[in-house]
Length: 190
Length: 168
Image 1 (cartoon, rainbow over the protein chains, first blue to last red):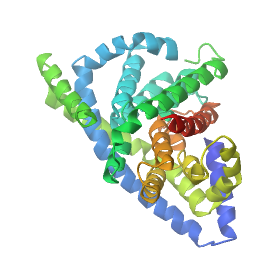
Image 2 (cartoon, chains in turn orange, red):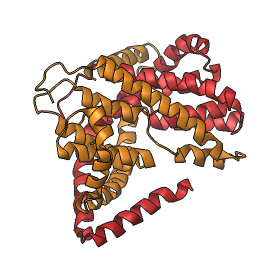
Image 3 (cartoon, rainbow over the protein chains, first blue to last red):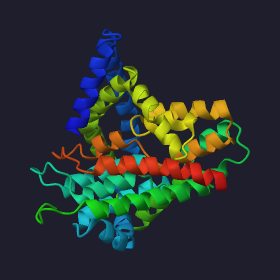
Image 4 (cartoon, rainbow over the protein chains, first blue to last red):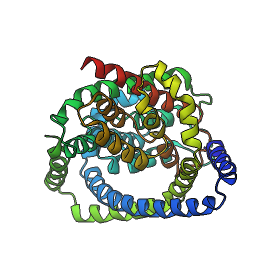
């Protein structure tokens, strides 16, 4: 991440220096403004979903879902603590129904509990969780259907099946690639 | 149908919790409290990635690289009109949704181009943003093959979308 950040920052700034040097500062400040607005929007979404998720956790519902997903979770993430399993299950369930506001906080917590404080390198289970999110597990793409509907599509629901096929294939490819190329190097590095 | 899944799920959680005798009010407030702490923790990460991506976009570098790789995209069957969209998707969530809206408005919601764009939009996510946020509560900085694999999957789903839309 450090390298990506550095490359993007330096190359963009150098590039801008030759075109419109005054844009560097104004663009950065604009972007920070945007992030504050985004954070505020996200805060609203997270507050709602984490409140709901806390109820689901305390009622034992999350543990039920975790038990239901035990086999696939074990296959994808290997042996993890109960706590991590619960967060991962929340993430997967929330991603599937398209509640990304509930999925992201659960994923952050899952990764946090998978890592040791001094760990600087991502472990295969972390990468797996990241890939699952990046390839989208959502069953019904509600945002897309909404936009299609707003633009007068004849049958916006037509997009569901092909999206599901493509999404499933790309997720599968992602899982296979992680399983093939991301091996646990140190055994204690859980 | 899709409209009812999330609301029904929320109602179900409340009903289930009250049957199990959970303190729903206390749990709700605790969850909200955790959320505020969380957003405070991840805010610097959001700022960092948004500044980098915005500079990358405004500088014209993103478009320049995109123009450079567009012919290669076409070799794999991704329509020329969508090269920019496919390229923007991993970087910017808000940017790619705006571009998606433009594409739909320009080509019509039921055109081939729009359907491919819809599938791409629905089958991948903002890779760089997720990479920043997911690891924000750890000291993990080296993501290894995570981003290359995620980008490959995004590209793969775009290629597949272009093919699937020819069949459907």
